[in-house]
Image (cartoon, rainbow, N blue to C red; front, top):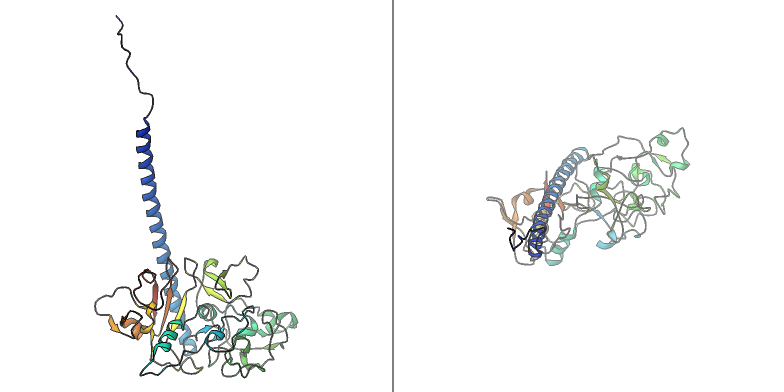
Length: 355
């Protein structure tokens, strides 16, 4: 006898069950994305540290070869110098002298100036030597297009490397500037490689108004091998970075980038006048707040000048170091006036101290 009741057979999920499954999937995807992001960030940090370690080794070798560490290059107009027009290739390649201060009492302006005394362009300039002939003396000084095809300089088409930067570290721009630039020492366009004493070149990228003078001597560098072209960028006047596919890439001063695409900064101890070998120990690297560690290991804590929070904590490594390299880390930001900042921009700064 057939039952008067039919059994109900489930053929699907309820709405509640679907929502629960969907929530579980979203949670798992979120956990996976967080894990992948953390892994990618850790890999970028590790790669950046390796790059900066290689840069530090190159700087040590540079000093062995030339007797001094590379000078600090930047836009001279920002430090009271003549500077170069922002739309010319020389921007950010002028020699920047350290801000003046009294060794016994640096004072607030000098301490603030010390935080800003670093270079974005020095690493690429002196570790790679990508520069124009009129800027570093590699081969012919002047336009290659005007050189006799059978001349020695014609065959030295520069890729990487440079002639010795001279006693001032700037190819004569400080100690023996090019004719017409005697009153504008340290400016990029005043560089006088090989003491050729050439007339002013209005636009070094075009090689105009320059005589073809062959500079002889050893070629130095490159001191660093960049296997990834994405680690080299061109610095625009507004601080943005041009890439090899951009039309203005060739004329821009070059910077070495970390694995987040931000220029790596170069700091060194101050020097007197235009002589990069005449090092002074006043306001050393331990007095640069953004270089100071977020936390300290046992036995490395020393005191430097006070930051905006009155914090004097610094490290013995910075105090004894000759130069430092810094990446702004994943957040690409820093707070220059303090060591520990509320926004924690300085927390992920990566610092390499040398030698």
